[in-house]
Image (cartoon, rainbow, N blue to C red; front, side):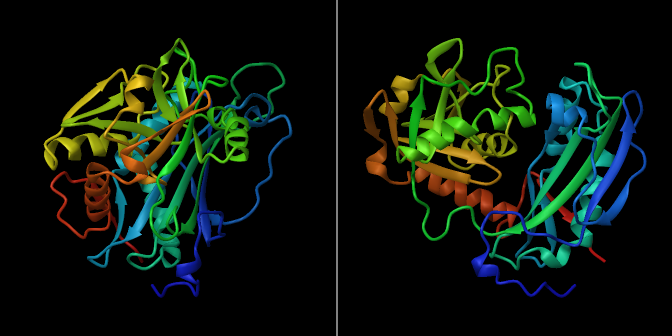
Length: 342
């Protein structure tokens, strides 16, 4: 399919209307079975919808790429399917079966394949969402749910050279609490992070580094990304203890760090004090891929990591991950999933 007439080099990371999106509905005790593509556009929803009044909604973030092999590919979409099912279960919503989820994603990507940037110019961001959409006045699960997928062509999250992040470690806000919903991709988690990020950026920081709610000596994650610390041959990332999102990129980096770099990876407790003296710190996520941290400030004191530069592990891991995603290099893990286009 001929590409859209878009200035691919000018693409940022934002909403860009495409041709179509997916929509399906399901009762609370039913199964997701039907659904179809509909024209991209605004939707109608009750002001009493469960998602609007009580935040009963979850989402995912994925990308489709035009690869070096001239194919349209997804990266580990089964993991997104499993995660949205787990998120839905936690918020009392009907769980999507992975095959159903993947079929819907493939249909949306195929129908909008001409909006996918050419090889090396970015990707098609994919946003699957499940909402409680029936009117719900009392605090209770909605009786009807809507599953939607929309897309947008996006460029690199960072223009030009990657700039190491300048973080502030917050003891004023927590991202999530133990036994809460920090380990699922619930919409409420992200609304709670807006005020801390605004305040951080007002002070000149890029993002917030959140500490563990029941032990502020420990690091949990950045607002929209997981975090890793390297000291020598050891790579540490906070363990999935119930309040950390199990990132797809996080899981991939753990595998690559062990196999490609021979690092000893530990999913455990990451002390904030160890972060200050790390050889390198980096964040991982669908949008940021692998992005280094150059500075961390806590209670007015700034700690510079690796002289404010991108470290060797982050550099190699980012290169390898992007290489697999874009099919520049072989994929020994079976992570890349081809989407057939019409």
